[in-house]
Amino acid sequence: MLRFLISLLIGLAVGAGVGLYLGWVQAPLEFVDSPASSLSPRYQDEYIVMVSGGYLADGDLGGALSRLQILGAPNIPQLVQDTAEKYISDSRGVDDIRKLVALAEAMGRLTPIMEPYRRLTVPGGGS
Image (cartoon, rainbow, N blue to C red; front, side, top):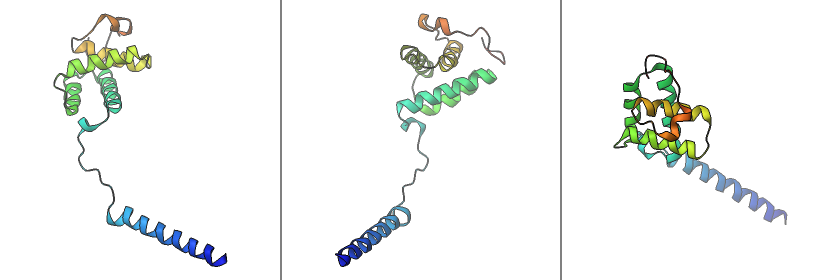
């Protein structure tokens, strides 16, 4: 029985050592220059919310548009509108919805479902 336990422990130690060597030294996983368009839709939505928050902070619509272009969408205003409507339909956080609605409104994409979430002013000169 003792011989079996010692053999088992040695086997586990050797297996763990080989696994660690292969995973960390021989073939580690590397993410290099992955495009933002490869993000899952959930994280793309979160990125759009962050860009919308940046727009609310500085009022720079051109900067927001250029930051959203890395997502690779053919129609950025439509993407922002769809994301805002999705957040409203899913009853997400009101602060996030207001950020998205402000950016959608600045892009000329305000829809009736967004009206209750409008802000009246945007710092830095937006609408």
